[in-house]
Image (cartoon, rainbow, N blue to C red; front, side, top):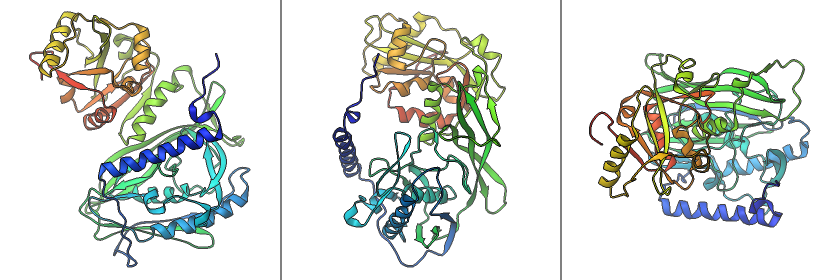
Length: 458
């Protein structure tokens, strides 16, 4: 069956129209959100250098026309003039596009390299991702909070050429709805200094006073793999937090898990790992990992042989101290409401008890009682969660874009330091801290209720 085209794919005009719609939506959202954007620029630099970085402007990227690299140099020079010296005061949010504005030929911007549908292309103002990459790399070494960050989804487009920073720490921007934004939640004031010379893009992130911590960004577990004939680049990017007074590492944060399809021919020197069936990351699993990464939600993950039941999965679970969970998907008697219930893996709950608990919670919140419950069919599971039996988890809610499903969590999950769930694939496990799980629950938008299966309701 031929896949139906999206509206934006029908013609160049519908693509332009869709893009303009997204630009307008972002303008309206920013107007209504009352976010205080950084805008004031100062010529005088703040006294403390937090981090500085340089980036080579003209690089050989596969077979890309070097003319686009020359044009990129012009675009970067124009863009940095609009950002250099910007102050990011406490409570303010820095936005790349709020500072640069729309890139047009009337303003002097030229055709540069862009990425469209995973392929190299060209467009007015192209190449500015290099600027947001540099800013992002400096921000990672600061106490600023990343509020919006996009990647070139799951693709390794070009072979390494003098790489200085870990793969996967780049950004993707497109005016104005794909932005790079940083929020200052500290009591310190920061400043970006940016300039270009004949060869390099230069940047300094400065501050009014010294930070309490320094940061070290590094890659781990990097390798290339072949999965069903396709080569992928894999790895993790970690951020170590170091106390300035003691020099001790106080935290280590996983900020990116890479599983990127290689779009070029690997040189003979590259060792490619042939993955076994259970090591191959499925599209469902990759979607979960991508979602968590895009929302800056920390997690760890590992793959193992298939475990569709708790008994099977226990053979492969690691002894990491996390609470492993059992997840069941149910429907009411009319079939117009669905519930995802999560509780400790060693518990067995009777349906009539679940009916009682859900009724008490829903009625107390002014919602409709579920009536008689039954297990939802595989068809309903696929329709609302995008999952198959044996792989149900709260991460299935990322597929419930209409927020139809109500999530019920045993209150003991709320007290666990960390939790383990399938990443929508029973050949893997995601371990997530309690704080990170609460961050995930806030991001999905579904109703979440807690039930006390040992006593009353919460």
